[in-house]
Length: 410
Image (cartoon, rainbow, N blue to C red; front, top):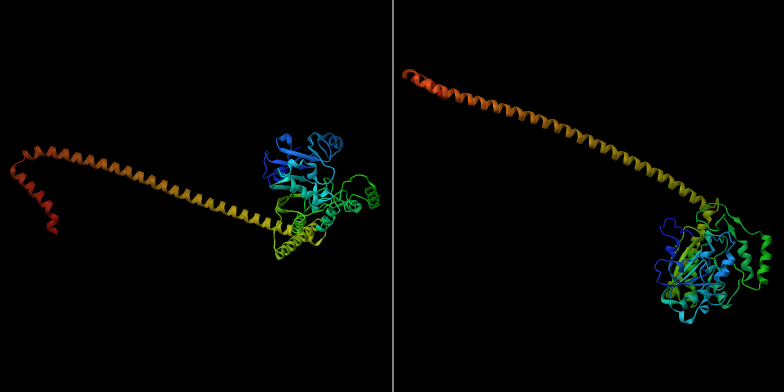
């Protein structure tokens, strides 16, 4: 079976549920059937509890179109067919497990208190109960009311081993479908259909009432907040010693809950505030369902919000495009200016080079002229000596007069 990654999470369903555990953790997995979360064949230190042996389960699911591979069914370590799960486990193993895992099991139990009480007995002091629970807002329990603590206490006091007949009636009467699978996202707009005709409901009631063995159904119906409220109230009343450590919603169908030993200890006032806050949260949970009903106020509001979000997104995109274009234009201007400066600098450098070349040429010409003057002066020396003295004196006098002329004018 291919591992499916949860949308927006980056982790597979198994990775989310098993986080905090490793393959050395001692795990007890309840009713994994054909979809174990911590399979022994992958190296997990897992003990399987199911309602029948591996061979019986393979025979049960071999022709089920929804079961891809019956070979995924693992060897069952302990068979549980009623009463407390803890009673099906050797006493020597009580209090030794790091994790008690149940995926889509708690809703089928006839007595949810005894089910969780068994988890307490089997876990170490720091062990964790890990539940994957159908979310009534996202599955075929869509129209059913959520389960209350009072109903849980009644089932516990009756030590209920089978569902009451009215449960089968309600299970069928409210069974909603949106194609396959029987679960969907919280904002899935597809219309729902009712799976069971009303004419079939009383016969189902009668069959369940007259059955000599357990008949399966969803007994318990939860939203994330309603599960938190039930655990809080059962702990406050002393039925359980558990608290909800964390709850996380999946993108569709279900949510996950992690429970630890040690019920919340709150003052009466704080407990009342906490219960009221969770009841408000339940109302919000249930209100979210109406988004799936066409033309409901929240559905219309949600559609309007999405429309506004789309408009804002379009405007944001336009602003971003304008910003990018502005940046591109500014960058182009900057590049053009730099290139203009580079061109002017190159021109100035060329002119400087030309002036330098001219200066070098003039310097060479001056040096040449000076050399020629020096040569002429050397040639004149013997000529001067050959002149009469009176003429040399006259020349010297003229040179002196010429040299001192500006001084005299001044």
